Length: 286
Ligand SMILES: NC(=O)c1ccc[n+]([C@@H]2O[C@H](COP(=O)([O-])OP(=O)(O)OC[C@H]3O[C@@H](n4cnc5c(N)ncnc54)[C@H](O)[C@@H]3O)[C@@H](O)[C@H]2O)c1
Image 1: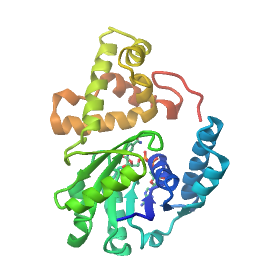
Image 2 (image 1 turned 90 degrees about the vertical axis):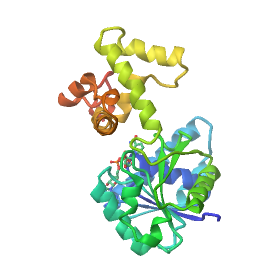
Image 3 (image 1 turned 45 degrees about the vertical axis):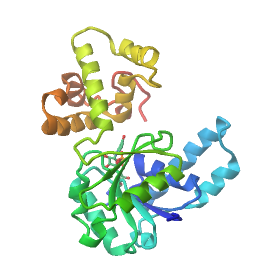
């Protein structure tokens, strides 16, 4: 099946970039949010990303214009009726995601595949918000952030997802030059389990006074070959999100994911990382 038209619901940090990945590959994209200004903001963010790529000589004004011409920002989910695939990237709240899928199930043609970009909610549970017939066409697609740059996408079949749906989604991800990896529908999937266990040890090193955050980041860069240090990365994802996902993993798996007191203190003091202007590092407040 060749996919021509994609829907993305939620034009925030993830949705805008996910939509850009499909538009860049030549597909028409409907990008929806609850307010027109939010949907337009997603498209503006895409333009800013493409401008940076032009400045680095990685793309051209022509490609930017063609890519953006394929993106329709809207508040009207009915424009997604004939989409081949709709990726949901709204807030990480079960009731908001479930309500979105209930609407999409009624609006979209029977063949439309519905996918969720959830980081922590069970795909099988989310699939229960759509009809039995649609559940076979429901799957998790966990894009890594920043989605316009990072190649990894975890493909997560739920209990009722058909093999055909998992295969079709894997193929379209390959078509947009991603590296899909199929993982089971368990809490945290695979990426977040690895990520949180790794940074949990980094936080223990800081807590014990073994190394400073700056030196931990140097270890990541020059010893492990990471493109960005772990403390800087945690500042980017935001400490409120880091701690809330730690808590979900702790509830599911116990001690090895106990939320770090270092990060909890940051959250308690409103030091949330880049978005608040202060985390392990200082940033100019936006
Ligand atoms: N931020 C990350 O690093 C990351 C990584 C992987 C997955 N995720 C997941 O992606 C999803 C989105 O995260 P984000 O960081 O982009 O959040 P965000 O807050 O930046 O964006 C969410 C967007 O959804 C919109 N929205 C809320 N309710 C809506 C509705 N009913 N209909 C349409 N739009 C609605 C909001 O207005 C907002 O623009 C979450 O499930 C999150 O767990 C996030």
